[in-house]
Image (cartoon, rainbow, N blue to C red):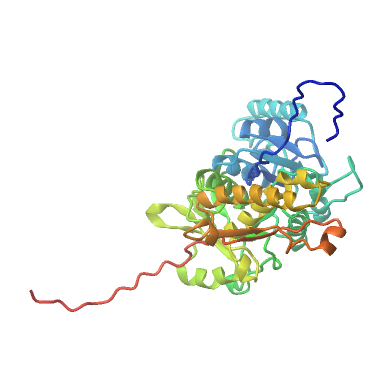
Length: 411
């Protein structure tokens, strides 16, 4: 013991022998990157509601896709988002308010029958991928997607309406490099002349999902318009996580605010799109407009479903954060038992939430950290190895009822 006992008496010592609970990390904090003519640029701004967003970045008139995506996120159950505005030309909210007042007064003074002046300009139609990809030149000098690098709580990343391959590839790469993030990507608004037969798709990745088609929403200035679905989908992810858990596939869910679809998808058409990892949003008649797909864009069958990938991301990040206390501890059997106990307790809570397969916890997961996984050569290298196996639940994507005739039997 470090304490020296030199005189007679009673000594009280605190010994840390308790558990180190592992808490599940959040899974629904979103990051939006887009263009708005109002607000700061290349800065990650936290917003927790629509009113807070409009005070910083203006409303629907000040951006092409970003505002409707953020509105759809909060309307569908989202609660926290970081916004990065990459527009090359912006003005402050105060300047935007003065401009709006000026245009309103000009509209009132305009002669009868003369068209009113246009609203504040939104982002330009032409998109520069370099603005979204950005540069990482160190703290305080990051632009584009790189401004999100230091925000560990981000789980979902979107570039609403950006179907440019370079931008989508950058978003996917950002999520893959940051390990614990998942990308929600939009298909292009218009199909080519070949229709869905040659519909483009992002590159293979287990860290992204792809949605088609665009949805129709109401815009106060323009009436009914079509907008990309990624923001609404992020809200549905957050809603599903809150109501059921991250292990529940974010599908068969109502898209709040959707009045129609750019294209109405039939079952034969989805038979073609679904195996390619293109998740469809469909009008289900009286059941409303619903998300009708739950696949990633990965060709690996192990990571086919969104909920499986996101469940593992949550578990991996939770264990990483919850076991930081282990670093530099004496690498002995005592430590191995403590680590096994803490991770087992965490996975047992995950199992009890319905996220893992198996009639018993032993069938659902295992944690192995002992002399077998930590032989002398591993310990001498300064390493501690713990092996974990998890059996995730998978969605009932195809529900099949087999019905046949049976002969009646006389009594």
